[in-house]
Structures are given as C-alpha cells and as structure tokens.
Image: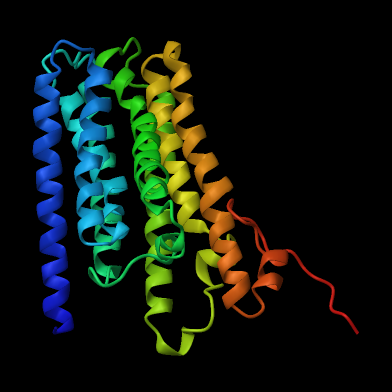
Length: 297
C-alpha cells in the first residue's frame, strides 16, 4: 500500500476511534447522572479508554492510545467550564486555564500526529512488551488505564478553579501563568529541535545534544511535568484547602522520573554511542549547566 495512503487511513481510523470514545464517554456521563461530578468524569474517562483499548487490540497497535494523553484534558476541562454548577466566580482565571490547556493540547497532539507513521508503526516501548504472554494485561492496565488515571489525577486541579473558588485572581495566578506558559514553550522548543534533528538522515545513529538538549537530557519531559505543576498552582490560588490535589502533579512527575526516563535512557545506552558520557555531563530532567568531565591522559 502507498505510504501516504496508508498514513491517511491510519489517521482516519484514529479519528473514528476517538469519536466513538467521546460518544461512549458522553453516554456514560449522562447515564450516571446521580453520582458526583468527579466520579462521573472518572467513569467517562475510563469508558473512553476502553474504546481505544478495543481499537488497539483490533489493529494490533497500542500507539493508537498515544494522543489520549493530550486529547482528554481539554474535553475534561470543557465539562467543568460549561457545567451548570460551575461557579464562574473568577471568569478570568477560568478562561486563562482553559486557554492554556487547549494550547498545550493542540500543540502536543500535533507533535504526535506529524511523527506517527501509521498503523504499521508501533512505539518501541510497546512492541518490546508485545513479546510477553501477558501483554493484553500490560496493555490494558499498564499502557492505557494507568496513564488515563494519571491524567485524571492531574485534571483534578480544574475542580477548585471551576467549582470551589474562594480567592480572586492574584499574584499566585500570575506565577502560575508564567510557569504553565513557560512549560508549554519549553516543551514546544524541545520537540521542534528533536524533530528537526531526527529528520536529518545524517543523525540517524546519533542523539541530539544541542539547544535545550545541552542543558537537559529530556527537556520535553521537563516541560510536560512543569505544565501539570502550573495547573496545580492555579488550583492552589483558587482554593488552598484543595491542596491534596497535589497528588496529580506528583504522580505524573513520578511517572516520568521512575518509568519514562529510565526506559529511554536504557535504550539510548544500548543504541547510541557515547550516550554514557552525555549522561555524565548533562542533567536528566531539570535544565542545568553542563558538568565538566576530566579528560583521561
């Protein structure tokens, strides 16, 4: 099959799967109307994930789930924003958070779309696990439901902003804007630099270590983690009594530090020459100045 045609079909399949997931989520939302708002959001979120899971099984491609991370949050925040019980006590803060989430989502989803090679391509992190007999279990609970639950926890920050505000827009909100917008910019620049580097055929066997990547081995992850901390700061500015929702950014930070980065590092050490020296010189996550290593005579 023609590569371009195959890619178009793949994106159509992906679009249809997410449309069906959205329909199922909406249906479950109304079906469980007697439950609390947060529980209804959780049920709708899990229901949508199950649809994507079914598609990933049918097409034998877990990468169909990849855009869920960036597609779900704007849908969730729209549920909050347009809810009949939303306070709209501080519409400015609510609109700013909504705008930042949508900007982050569009950019991250676009970044995924332009790199996805179609249904014949599956992320190496998934294909390596496919060899295991219990892959269906790993796929459902580890590769799809777990990220869905982490995003749900991260989105808990929307609740105080939309439903339980007691403080007007203030200095903490300004700090939150700088952090959240800065995170989006950092992640955008890191992804652009990485995309250009990887699309240069001369760099196929190498790894990027210029630009933001000269200060952090994973600046894109740093931007992603910081984004969720920025959202929590909006939550704290709205109503500090919901400080327990810090579990969202903490969980996402643990995901990247404990799973995503180690997996990437292990693979790069195996496939990229001199990556071990890069590890010695450059910070893993938080951007910082290069360490000077002593040369051996």
